[in-house]
Image (tube, one colour):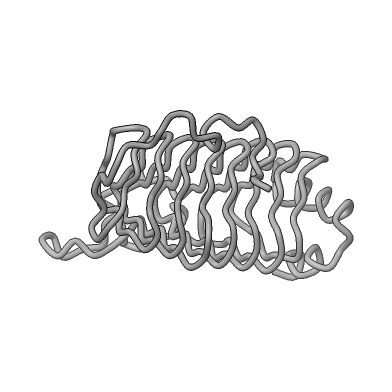
Length: 220
């Protein structure tokens, strides 16, 4: 804890070296973390990846950020590490509390990611707006125990503001999830706008939409 506190206040060029050396992280020389408390068990940040200010990421096994991916500010990223001696999730030995952010993808700000199980965000995707919740665990009322399931967000997706995404659900590539939607199951049809509570297919997306063919991650 003392070492974590000390590294928090060091200049970034020195902080990065200390994080790599003493915590075994793999932070590329061209990656950067702002004034954020980022301490998963493992951290992999490829070239150009960025984590902004006021984020907290604790109690998960790994965060992996692809090239030029971004996490904005004031996001809460947590989980339930496999190293714990707790009886929770002992029936799920293959569970992996991991956050994967694909190359050129972005998480904006003020979102909550519960990485009790794996959350995968594909390449060139955007978790937009504010106050969305990605929840991989809940109580299984039939078995009377905590349980978890992964979440998959495909490539070239746009997730709108203030949505709830539950464990076991999937948003296909080249898709949009509308504002305030509840995604609670696996969808498979690309090029589709999904929305509502619970979410359902609303309409097809025209394949000429430029968002889905861009070569830069950040949208100006």
